[in-house]
Length: 499
Ligand SMILES: *Cc1c(COP(=O)(O)O)cnc(C)c1O
Image: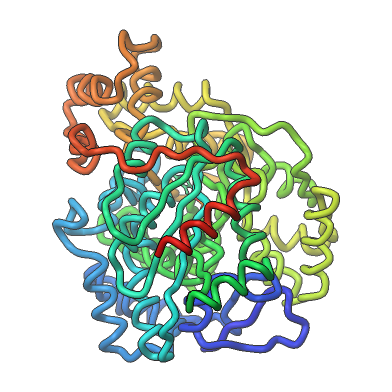
């Protein structure tokens, strides 16, 4: 399977390994596989009883044809195991009364990003070996909170890589910030930015195509790569758990093999839900993919009108990992929906860059609406869901997952579509103790200290917090630097010269 860029008119292709090592295409576009493998339901039935590791190897194999079967299996096996994931099923599906929750936060940093970022470094190291790359890969990451930590944990002390992470200083939770500030490893750097996630992401994307940067890296025998979901190696591992969850519903007797389900996905950069779209294209029986947003409802408006307009107020919400106005992976979806029209994509994204908006044709919008539904909710609505689910079913969820549940409820009410639905549960509630406690108690806690709040939540819920979060209490802070948003380039230049 070869890959080409969403913006390349000539469709010059590269191998999966090259796409993964590069991250972003040189023309600023995103790499996509030339075709999508497809399976019949009979073929898929044979995967029903596989372990997560075996399933991952099956799902990924047709996308990663330049890896040997042994290489792929060993990457997957190293990435997903107990006790690195605190549940041996890796991504278990929990049945609730009216829907199910796909728990994606059992990994080492308690967010769904671990499912991708435990595998990506292994895929990259293997590809580097296969391709004979000797340059050091410099991984630049813009994070809205969870990617940064998951990427740091995935790449720390990985041979031939260095990683620098930029997070919005006032846009992440106390524990998320501590997770990054205390990161161990000799090849890591972490910077707070005086700006929001979009500022951090735009800065990183600009550096990727900066000539001076490129020269400097060459002199230091380095090259850029990305651990954001613009990297295909981040996205393809996420396809796996849609299959896993579907098979879990069949095993639990919730659905018959072949019956369609909906997936409701708390969405920011559009990576997670795009992986669901790939699962559907591969033949998984999916009816609708429901795109759930918080008050930053740019995607809700886009799916309703066909106009993507980032010229709007940025809201800081209780689901910070979804506080995004530029959803990068939408580019991949539009490329697919426009029948691979690279020139249209180049025009749309030039317009996004220059005017902050673009509009797709009615025809494309119709196609998108056949597969996707979208809605949004406020923090208050999400808090109400957190309290209600805990009170009625004893299930504790985080604010991102709550956005998913809330939007599912709205979708069912407006559409009448009661298809069995899986809501992707994207983070542990303990990453967001303050807001979750506030939702449950309907009043602010007596103290702000994150570890006090963590213990309060444990007492209240009777559910133990993940060790990686509890252990932060005794971890030393290593990274406290906060930069003006224009200073990302200088910070990277300094990081490069230090090495
Ligand atoms: C990253 C993240 C999301 C959004 O996922 P995208 O792939 O960016 O759409 C949702 N919830 C949590 C907890 C996240 O960390």
